Figure 1 (cartoon, rainbow, N blue to C red):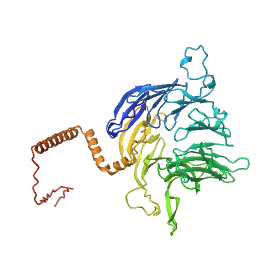
Figure 2: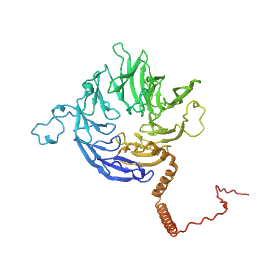
Figure 3: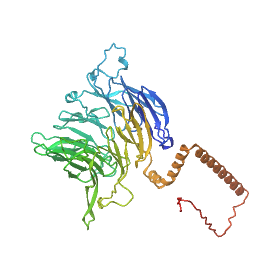
Length: 577
């Protein structure tokens, strides 16, 4: 068994990839990070990638992929798949998927490496492999569909997974292939025939429908869409797995494209439907939001006059943010034409006797004439970074959706959100952003893979204050190590929240000791003296009790002593003529 990730004083780990070196470090806020292991040269020939829970760190080498783990990142397995370019994992880290442009070749029986080669003649010509991460052996291989053999931009991932790793699926011509991962055989030994299917997405969490009991197990669900064809409308459908029962379908007209966005808890599914007018000269977007936990899965439609470029749900919440613009094929990118919109529930009573409440999504804040092109919510919700990512003139805007202050008049009083721009930061050469697992810090970096402008990284806190920055020649990539799911029970989490101020004081003390060596010695000495005195006092009390003496409590009136302390707040000098 692999040892879980150690947490040094609750710190997170991160990976830096620069030139031909890769290092793993402990994050220490504004201080120089400590090495988890010394940087390794030529650890990877392409990139490094963590598995979803941080158990494995995978590197690429010409012959395939290697997985590393435990405290010192020892090698765990080698996966032989020459020429690998893309890697993905199942949500619970049971399986890994690799893709190579080089077709698999079966080795002859007399080949000296035959015994170590993982593929048989049945994998001849295949390019896509599903691996068992623990055994290091291939679980299933696939050939690429003919339409993907010639494409220049490969959609990824090609294999998608249910929340519990029990099922995986892939799109084929007019069909969806769903596999049971126990043996990777087709579910019920047949394809799901869906004429014209374009894409699908599994729900990232198990779903409990309104008709289910609390004791019922969570269900696996996927959504797929089909275009207009043979005088039939385009459709988005929600299907339960393994029954393959279609639970809800929405018909759509004049559709150019559909993108599906699941909310983290799978309570909502937003389908971004890009539509065109009959003349096909203008495009615009509708948002179709499926509410899976409500009876009969109602769908709310939000009709927009602009085309949505980017969409993101708040993790574990119901709010979302979009970036949109008016459709113009001859758009000038030098102009600030984008619109950022923040959505929340607006509640309205529809029956005062029954106290029933109608909820609908509304844009409670709309900001026009923006250059913004990227959205990234904190994994804990509430805070979002709206950024402009480009080689020169990149900007990061830090917003709080639950600002504890007076709500501006331009925001609806019918929503609970209170939006506030906390801070704006400029960062030349920005290539990418990523929040740490705690949602308290966000890394922003400039990659030499993209350009040579101010390569390195910066780390900001959730309110946009710069915590640390480092320019690094040849800097390529930054990766926070994911954390495994918390083992605390609901009551334990409640206890932590209740005593959060007490824990915060302890963490502040640790931070102070790390930042100042002299302060560290003073604090440790003080703690040592207090511990010695406490032990001595307890021993004296125990000795007195043994001799039959009890502590005499003298009753006296409490005396209040007031001490007045003067402090100079400001000094000013004035010349008197």
